[in-house]
Amino acid sequence: MKKSSKQKQRFSATQQKVIWGVGIAVVAILSVFLAMKAIESTQDNLIRFFNTNDEINKLTVRGDDGFVIENNGDEWLVHDRLEETDQFAVTQGLAVLNQWAGEKVQVKRQSVGLDFPSLVIRLDYADNSYKRVALGYPDPTGEGYYVEVQGDGVDGIYIIEKMMIDYFPLDVVKYLDTALLPWPAGNIESIQINHQSDVINLTTNSPYPEEETQANVAGWFIAEPYKHYHNISYAKKQELTESLQTMRMTELLEKDMTDWSTYGLDSSDFTIDFITAEDKLTLVVGESATDDETYARIEGSNDLFTISNKWLELYQQSASAFHDGYVKILALDSLSHLSIDSDSLKVDITVEKDEENTYFKVDDKFLFEKGFREAYTAIAGLRSAGSSEGATYGKPDVVITSTVELEDGQKEIALELVDYDEDHYAAFIDHESDFLIEKAHVEEMLGVIESVLEY
Image (cartoon, rainbow, N blue to C red; front, top):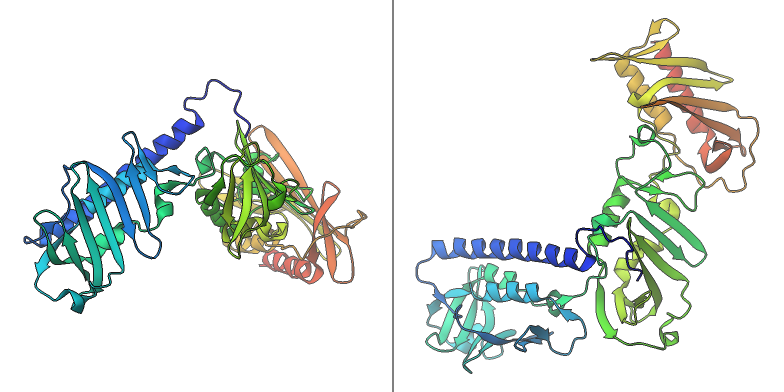
């Protein structure tokens, strides 16, 4: 991974990551503490299982996917894993356990599933003592569990609130630092996907003035493979945001890999570049490891890891899947003039504004504002009917010209619809076309505008 050459950055990527981690951990611990206190306040006869002041050396979880976390004197380490242990996550997990408390009950252990417990959690302390909690059946209310506690002064069977169990992370991955991004996801300004022969460039930046992009509610554009920059759909933006926030390896397999060929990582045809203003990280994707995971690496690193196939799905989609579907949306309030030139309709509409109102005029006639705003959605709503690859520019049948009012002037944008085939126009802007539009859709739009002019 390339390191930033700028020295004025306030925090390094590692420092930012630590700060975010501390913040998240503090919030999580506080949430758990308040929840546990709420439980304690409703019951006065709860007995706490663990001693919060005792020094813990080891946490052992035995279940379907058990694990061991041990303190080596300097830090916590998860046994048999190559990933860095997330120190904050371990601290948070222990904070949850230290809140575990229950009401002692008199029942036979075999009758409540404690002969063969589904889960056992054990804490070993520095003085060689330990506490062990085994999980049995749910209690009759379904709101708690029977547990058996072994340890100094608290031996017995208890009922513990289900919520206390639920708050404790039982997946070892929760205690590992598996994040792949060295900076907050919000720092990313561009993503370039190279998948087989396709290239897709997603970016938060565009060459257009701000006034021209007011209708872009997602804040992201798709550039390549298109000639123009187009809006990403809001739904895809949400998927993208979630993807960046959950970009994690599933397991680190090797820290000093030298032969990548076995894993399809020596000459991959699938890479994803994540780009900030100062940095770039390239994820190289290899062959399938299992039905659910794929081998991957970070360019410039010797770490071999796997990544979830489900996470990768977003980056294997076509460019059209990211596009919001509209050929060119301009916010009506950003315009000072709009004209349509076709065989069936020729009109020039002037947009005038004062401090309180916006007026739409044709010649000296004012249009009904609400009606025209509704009619304008027929223009803004012109949708792509597919790629116009191979389209040749010629004399347009329909021209929609919008004049955008800029802070320092004006910009004229002409959407020219050129005959493509019996059912479609090719939509050109600046003599370049990305999409087709159905002729029937255009005729419908012209009819809507004509009807509002006659109102």
